Amino acid sequence: MLEKLIMYIQYPFVRYAMIVGVLIALCSSLLGVTLVLKRFSFIGDGLSHVAFGAMSVATVMQFTNEMLLVLPVTVICAVLLLRSGENAKIKGDAAIAMISVSTLAFGYLIMNIFSSSSNLSGDVCSTLFGSTSILTLTPTQVWLCAILSVTVVLIFILFYNKIFAVTFDEGFSKATGTNVEFYKLMISVIIAVIIVLAMNLVGSLLISALVIFPALSAMRLFDNFKAVTVCSAVLSVVCAFCGLVISVLAGTPVGSTIVGADAVVFVICYFIGAFRGGTQR
Image (cartoon, one colour):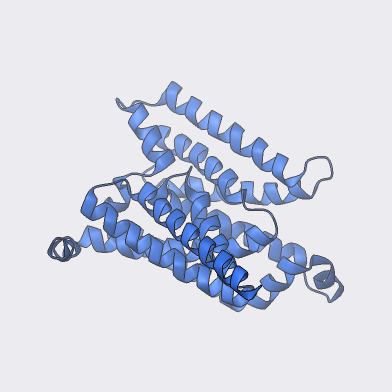
C-alpha cells in the first residue's frame, strides 16, 4: 500500500489535490471555533447552498471560470445573512434556513430547465457531495486556492485579538471602541471565501462538517481559546490529509471520506474528554 501511495504521489494532480485539500481544511478550522461559540455554526451550510445556486447559474451560462460568479454572490449573501440575523423580525437561524433552502431549490430548478448536460443527476450529485474535480485541478486553480488560503490565514493571525474579543463579548468590545460590525463582516466574508474554496473538496452539503467537526473535537480536549483553535487546525489538516490518502488508495469519494475521518476523530476526542472529566472528578 505504501508503494502504491508513493506511485500516486508522483503524479502532479495528486500533489495538487493534497496541497489544496490541506489548505482548505486549515482555513475552515480557524473560524470554526468562533462560529461554534457564537452559535452560528450553520452559516456554512446556508452559504454552501447559496454557492450551489450560483454555480448552477454559472454552469448554465457556461462560465469558463465559475468562481467569478460564485464568489461575489456568496460574499453578498454572507453580508445579507449577517444583517438579517440582527433583525428582530428574522432571527439568525431563520434567515439561514430561508436563504439556503430557496437558493438550493432555485439552483436545482435552473439546472433542470436550462442545463444541456446529458448527465444532470451526476452533475448535481457531484456538486452536492463532492467529486473527483479535486483531482483535476489545474496549476492556475491551485495557485488561486493557495493565495486565497494564505490570505485567510494571515488575516486571522493579524486580527486574532479582535476576533477573540468579538467572539466572547460583543458588548465589551463595543465599549472599548472596537468596530464590532466591521469584524463581524470580515468573518462573514472569510467564511464565504472558504465555502467557495471547499466546494470542490467535499461538495456543498458536506462543507459544514469541515467547519464544525474539528472545532467540536478540539473543545473536548481543551478549554482555552488559543489551544482549541490550534488543536482544531491540526485535527482538520490531519483528517483532510488522511481522507485524501484513503480516497486515492481505496477509490472512495473524496468529500465523504474526509468528513468520515473528521467524524471518527470527533468520537475519539469525545471519549477522551469524557474519560479525562471522569478522572478529574
